[in-house]
Amino acid sequence: MMSVSSAYAARVAEGHLRADPVQEAVLPALDRVRDGLNLPVKRGLFRKAAPPVRGVYLWGGVGRGKSMLMDLLYATVTVPKQRRHFHAFMQWVHAEMNAVRKTGASDALAPVADKLADEVRFLAFDEMQITDITDAMLVGRLFERLFAAGVTVVTTSNRPPDDLYKDGLNRALFVPFIEMLKDRLEVIALDSPTDHRQGRLKGSPTYFTPIDSPSRAKMSEIWEDLTHGHAHPEILRVHGRDVEIPAFYNGAARASFYDLCGRPLGPADYLALAGVARVVMIDEIPQLSSENFNQARRFVTLIDALYEAKVRLICSAAARPDMLYVEGEGSFEFGRTASRLEEMQSEGWGSQA
Image 1 (spheres, rainbow, N blue to C red):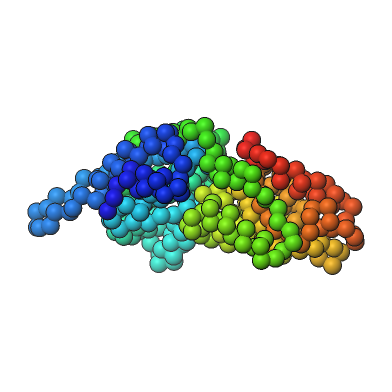
Image 2 (cartoon, one colour):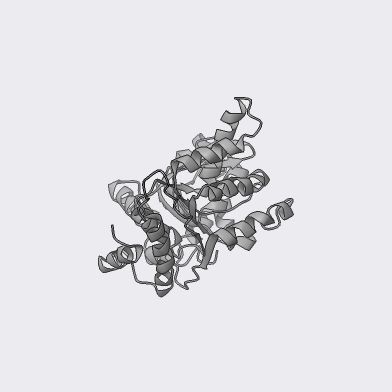
């Protein structure tokens, strides 16, 4: 199986990637992880356990290629492995711990960590971020146990380790975990000046109307370019509730209008979405009127949340913004939303975030 460097060069040669010197500088560290994990395991009664392979903490701004590089590494590693979005991973940990508690076990975390360590030697996490105090109190023990079992971790993040859980409640209790990360993982800043995601969207329309086969095809083409087929459902935990986003990858989210506005969601839900996504694609926004007033009202709230967070919006709709809601209760107030929809189509929108 080829090295990460060779896989990267092949994608550049095929035209799927544009060579980036900052990305190329990361490749030796990823090859080190790949080579260490792929060393053959000696068999026999007195064989020594494989030495732990130091992982990588790759951080930088959105669109710099962190997830793409991690995916190249993941594809070249042959040991038992898992790739998870970090938020989804922590949701899995909580669910597993709840199941253990029902057995009457006094320590719910240890069996979960041990089960995972038995199943994998390599864990790849996308978008490590800690915003929840419950997660902050868990990750230290969890990762300590995984590292002790020889599990190698590679993770991406939008921020350096020292900024994780910044200003969080009881953060002093979290600091040892940060020091553990810096000790067990090679911390690399991917500080390329190029936002490759914005480059892919540069000059491309972001608002497609009417809703027809060409619009659907264009939306699918953009989504494939953003995700390379790696999207997965994402669960957002909001005030104790689970809010599912049907498709998510590397800060890009996709859902239909009815997924986001046909369900009883509110400002907190849309703020949570704006907090994890830098690009949001919304399919098939219908004509709005007093007949679907509640959905229209939620849509206004959703657009406000995305606008304030400078999220890049790509959508298909039944009509252009100024003609989406032309009559009925709320149509006058929709003027501000139509104006924001127009502004969010401008060149470079979202690059300020």
